[in-house]
Image 1 (cartoon, rainbow, N blue to C red):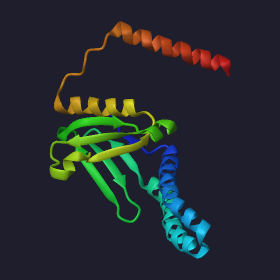
Image 2 (image 1 turned 60 degrees about the vertical axis):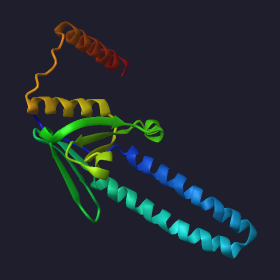
Image 3 (image 1 turned 180 degrees about the horizontal axis):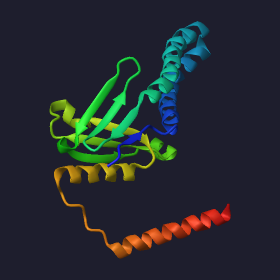
Image 4 (image 1 turned 90 degrees about the vertical axis):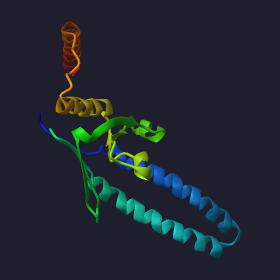
Length: 184
């Protein structure tokens, strides 16, 4: 089985920018109100809010470029970090759950997350996944690929595929491709 290397879609940066912009707008509203009544106090309030905003917009592309997700024959690997690099490697034998999530903003950008969890996490760690593959569009395919590799690694037989149904799906796909090529 070939290794699969994924990186987040470019929409992930837009998603993060949108989330942080909403947070900062909320913090800016009181500053604008104060600014209406007294300019100096308004500026004193707004400047400390703008400084972190500038840092966040500087940080987002660097963090985005640091993300790399790998699915090998043995592990799920997540690499991230700008200054402090972190690599999380989860063997398929330890994976107990693979979830996919998508919040409303991610839905808008057509991206989402895959959460890979193990039974080994305890306490507060149990509430979060050991690895999160984020900013991907093909969540269903990635989730199924991970689950298939877990089944293979654990020796669980693959589900039987109805050959006739599979061939009919392939035929439909080929016809769609032919129509797409004719339209170009």
